[in-house]
Image (cartoon, rainbow over all chains, first blue to last red):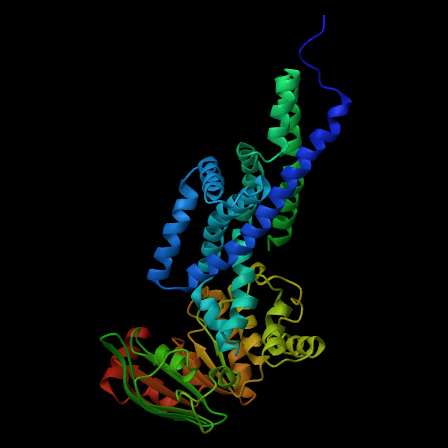
Length: 217
Length: 240
């Protein structure tokens, strides 16, 4: 008897790998952009007055409190309705990067604020100017202090990237959903996908452990 | 020469310096003693332009420290300062700690900066610690590192703000020995200190600060062993 469903076969490898690559691409992009933007916003927040902080803080609170899946759907729907149809990859990258930025900026802000004022005064007393003190003292010490938190955010971004599937980006989860609906083998496929997420995240977390060991001074 | 002329300084409503005048000649070692809140540390911060003043003048080698036109970063190169908390830079090795400012502030080549840093570290007895991270060292060693780090900028003056106060008692001696060494070499020094023995033996003059003014100043041995002002007498009888 002919089944309606075609079982999983080696021919699906390319399809799955496309999903893996797309997950890696959007995760790396969001981590890089989120880190750069988060560094800038975190620094501005650590340096500026209450008013600027309140404005930024409000915006960041929204980004951090509204579930990512809702942000994705609302954003892609609104830009679509506004007549700017965005590719799911572009829309997903924008939302995921901003979401990452919101968490990263708080990580970096606490890093900058963790460097004791007296240490900065000591640097200034050696003749370093404001920016030299930031670049040579505050930045490296603050970043080391928050590296474990940075790593935690970066790892969760990889997993959160699965949600971009809801707006149609063909990343790992969406790839697997399509395979499941064709093959009706959810167990095998989800286990496989889980392993792939692990394989993507593992190098980052083990690199993180290596860096932490090196920095443990 | 450091010339302090009728300096006033307030934090909010609290006036901590109420007209302090004082000259420190080149090669002189001046110790400042006094109770907490007497303004002695604040004066050091004002000399180094870390804190602004509200009235009066501080002149270092003909440069008005608090004038708008003064390049304070440049000025601080000739005023080395060491604090109660040693403030080692934890991400740099001992050698890098001492070489950083010569390299980035004085724009020396890396080799030159390292050479000076090594020399100053050996000077304070840390010649075997170049590649150690400061957090692995004792407070006394970190404080000597802070001294070497300041000396690597080749300052003309050194300001010491209670540099032994945060140390365990058994570590005080090694830091005081380093200060003594510098004094013997002719460094001009202003030391805010609670070590009366050090003030008496090492400094040329001692100033006693009381509530933002200099209550007594004079030759070191005289102020410590035979104070004239009743306030100084009372303070010294308490700290002994």
